[in-house]
Length: 86
Image 1 (cartoon, rainbow, N blue to C red):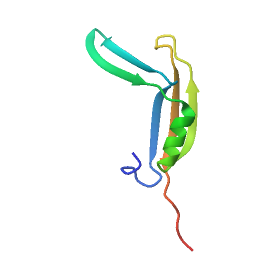
Image 2 (tube, helix red, strand yellow; image 1 turned 180 degrees about the vertical axis):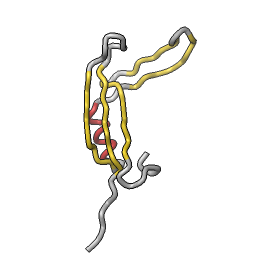
Image 3 (spheres, rainbow, N blue to C red; image 1 turned 30 degrees about the vertical axis):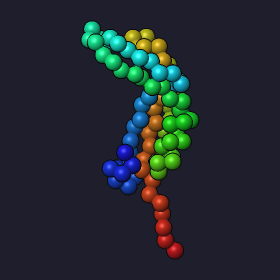
Image 4 (cartoon, rainbow, N blue to C red; image 1 turned 60 degrees about the vertical axis):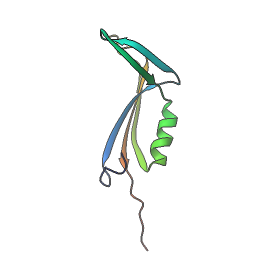
């Protein structure tokens, strides 16, 4: 993402919070073979910062009643350009 964003370009990252992997063989009435990986927010923040992003906003929330029971994380980040000069 960092490579394709212009300087100060924004990215919004959304993820399920945790350390588990959930596997589904059926989803919405269809056969599937899919794994959902959950992530801890601090780990995603670190990975984004290591990639050259600055985190502008961070939000965590519980699920809404109609959603799967997981916590959600959201990060609003911008591409940081290293400043050089005298």
